[in-house]
Amino acid sequence: KKPHKCPICESSFSKKSILKQHIESVHEGKKPHKCPICESSYSQKSHLRGHITSVHEGKKPHKCQICESSFAEKSNLRQHITSVHEGKK
Image 1 (cartoon, rainbow, N blue to C red):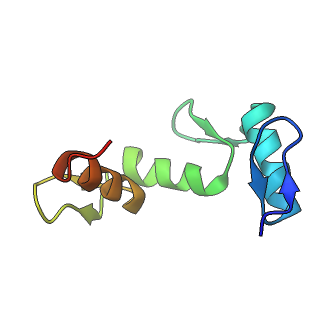
Image 2: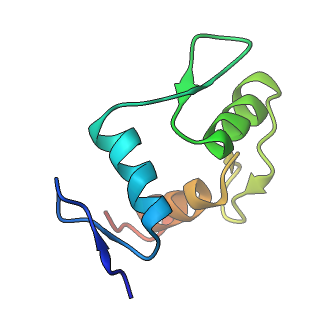
């Protein structure tokens, strides 16, 4: 169930707090989590952590079993497999 609907777009959310975060990041462009190393900034702290891990620390633990590619995020590995190896868009 996703009873909390965005008044600006068609998105719906299960929690009011997630709706608030959506409005602030997507519609208001707020990115309060700034990288201490470069100029990047993010709407969510977890995205900043992922940025630091992959970009500044060079860690990419999610490895493709089919080719030599590796990714910082598991979702990027799944997307890679779907588009590159399964030929889906």
